[in-house]
Image 1 (cartoon, rainbow, N blue to C red):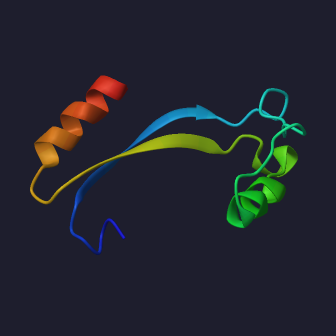
Image 2 (image 1 turned 120 degrees about the horizontal axis):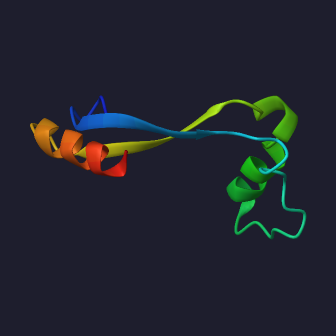
Image 3 (image 1 turned 90 degrees about the vertical axis):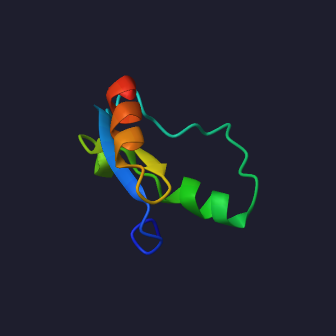
Length: 74
């Protein structure tokens, strides 16, 4: 969707999934059916080592702003 709108965007890598830390919380109560579907699909073993990132997005022609925020986040 971001590309379709021609918005400026940047990805900032933050950390990697660790199956020892990022376990499924069995006490979690989903807020809706889509939330439940997403929560049930999480498998710590499957995602172990996968990168976790933050996407910084701004309106068109705001590349400098996106890069500045990405640098601050990093």
